[in-house]
Length: 369
Image (cartoon, rainbow, N blue to C red; front, side, top):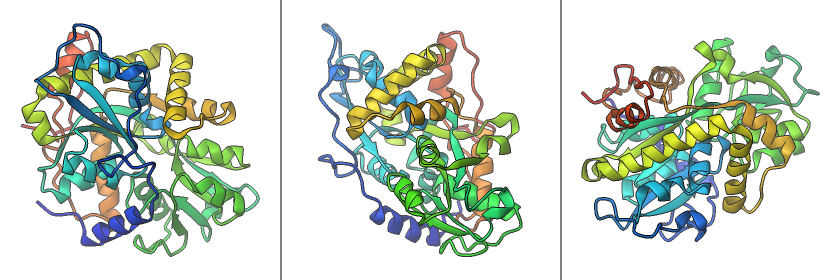
């Protein structure tokens, strides 16, 4: 199987080193889980597969709200019984993939590009995508004093979260479609791509260090709150305005050894998405509450409300769009043409959906045979 480009590997490691993580846990990757109501085990509950805990990772982004809400409402703990739900939060995909590969987490919510990279770098042996979580929630926000139209983006400085991450690939592909040339590694060309941690991008935007940013929520709405203007919503570039922004991945060894635990987490995920879609206002508040617990500060309404509206929560991994995103990375020169056959194993998810009376989801030819 073709491997990920060595250029992306080196760039990804460099970008990882430059990204400040949240408070480190004992595992050395994400933040420590907190002893809150969501970690309490119901009386009489039993351990699943004899496991003491299942370690779950996610980002502090609204695009990971399925995990945020599932944790805040105690849904993961409920389904896991006496097996403790442990949590770690991450700022970047490479750090979460590293944690998954080392066994520091078992299951994680993550963007498509890190999942593709992790799968190809391991020759298809490290992970499986076992479900979807969210679509959308990515925007190009610009300084309206410097950029008033899409053509004005040429010659400007645009931030993306990290070299080779999902939004970086999307912006490079969009720029290429405009006929502009950009060296993916350096970010220099007809547009200057500035790789900037989502946590510091609003300050860079406010200071004028960047003229805009192609970023996920809530960072996009934070920029709008600083005077930015949404120039483009990425969903408008996709058929039916749907594209995968967050998947659920699992260590292959964990999936093989503990399918009941994986099923419990997927049950909680499906329940969380169902509740989110049926109770959007309550779900928005629950996700924000967990963000506040994780980061120490909840989002203000002028950021939270518009950010939430742009995200769709779905169990469908939107597999066909993952293949397209991989093609975009190849086109940008960030990835050697990958063989993604087998990256999905949706067997357990479809079992859960069937039990709930819901339609199965499809792997678009990329599933486990």
